[in-house]
Length: 278
Image (cartoon, rainbow, N blue to C red):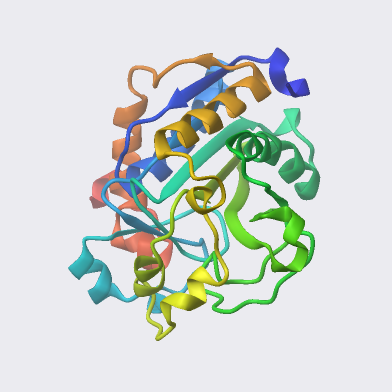
């Protein structure tokens, strides 16, 4: 349990939702933390499948025809880094939302604090996971899982393999309106065809599988158990109460998704539409 456990937290085992709503609801949760003194940890999945672009990622790196043909939505995150293919099965995602004045101001220290329950959850699943022990150079910079591996926030397994360990989780955070939001993607299983196919590149599928591992490969447990274990670790870390979204939060998230995370203006150019422009 962390020092943050004396605050009010909620744990949300969220329903699968479209990617634009999943990104929007993090900003709504940030507003709730500030206005209602209620912090959030949650686990969630993506439906339909979604490519989330890093904040500054060039949209020209996307194979738009592939995404359209395969039914993969595209959104853009507030966090940096490379794009990530998410779906309801192979990806497990999480979010932590807390006021900035309650957590370390140093970025690396904050990563260390917020990744503790993620590492704990993986260990409980039977995955020998830890922050990367060594840096690994980029294979394909537009892809989160194929760009350079950073010991500060990239998690690998098996950790005992040292420089031969493979990436299993990417984590990123940003600060907004006196709030820190961290989210991350954990590979439950591998979908190399989609992870490579969503990008405008000729990379072979083996390029992905040589660099990335998964919970299923490392521990062999089923997805439901993996999700439950991660949720429990997050909840215990901050002593959160099991809960759901408050009245109005999902409606606000859908409105924000329409104006921002699901709009071409944001996805292509990082422009947010006003309500009158919809």
